[in-house]
Image (tube, rainbow, N blue to C red):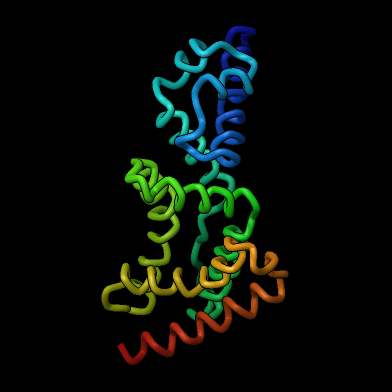
Length: 194
């Protein structure tokens, strides 16, 4: 790799890392490109050379965060086992500190009509929901599979609210597994009657 290309990549990653830190700690609206430049130890012009706007930088931060966790690939186990395994992975991913901070920020920023809510939905939420929707439609012939996928996801994430409000600690692995199992059983019983 040439020295110029290596320097380009190093600066870019430094800017993304600074943006991530500042967005998660201060929120989107309270983060300025000046602060990003200072934290990344580059000039403001350098930041704009790599990212034409704060929303472009934020989109890259979200994109990289979404790649940190694999999207669940459904296999050939029974539907209950597949959904439980999906649920455990999904809940565990959302219990990571940086995910909780991202969600807190998204809630706070969305109330002002910011475009970042749409970015979050299209770049992270839709990508995670699509395989579940396809599984429900193809393997279980669920009507309104997208709506049912949303219901299951909401059930799985129901343990997140007390954590976001600091009224309980992040659950241990056993708690996550039990919660996923309960949600899946309720969901599958409900889908049968729908």
